[in-house]
Image (cartoon, rainbow, N blue to C red; front, top):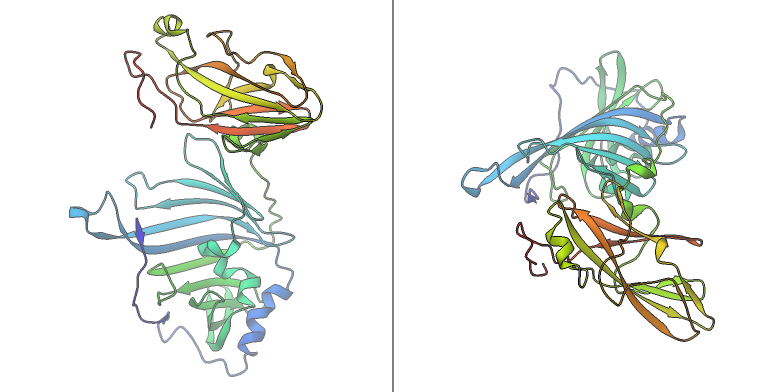
Length: 362
């Protein structure tokens, strides 16, 4: 668990006194902070590092430790926000490596050896590196010019300010084009970090950021996701995916002879509306997190889901049985309907143990 550093003095990020020179001819601080937003800045390469207090497996006697989060990659600011980043954290022994792709308010994440996961509706200001985005710099308040400083071959204006979230920061802005090239922030009562440093270079390289290919996404994100026990609208009615379980009703002897797989039973309830509703079980396939398909098997006893037409105003329930390798337990049922793809995560399984006995629901 990462903890906020509370009650720390307000930000006072500083360079050695000799490195920042007076800048009596500098433009106003507000004008400098707005310059990047008005410029032709489209994309840049970024590196960032932040430190946090944390409690975790690497802390001795459950005490707090300092955790370093590091990231690097490319960020696009025009025509829309996008990013391709790689992050690591000393919170984990293996550094918790994570790849991130940001496309607007969609954030895709992937750890090594896994498929891409998707979080929707992620606010841009939730990213630590967003403090350096031109639109956010332009909204900063309490700005003042500290001086000027050469960072490598780039002559910069140095400005202190407070961003819209209350984080105080210092930013170095290129005198030539107004681009931010460095930002630092230290904690105050608004921050969750101990310190933050962001560096930018390689501007306007023509970076394009796109979502991961569909076949690299976890199948739950292949279409419209529905929660179990909630009706899914169909042309002429609805279908509801019930809670899945282990043991396909009468197929135990088959299970005993297959030590490499276990059963997953997915129940469905179809409800016809004002007109008859056609049921096609072949539209449903179970997938693991890497997109490997497991078609339904002709196993088990009634009530199996079969092809049929349900009279108007009536309902029918039935099950589909799938055989899944023991190594897979993150599963998604996918329905490829003519009107679109629907998905639902399969969980709460009655998993068999190593000798084939049914474990309780978890």
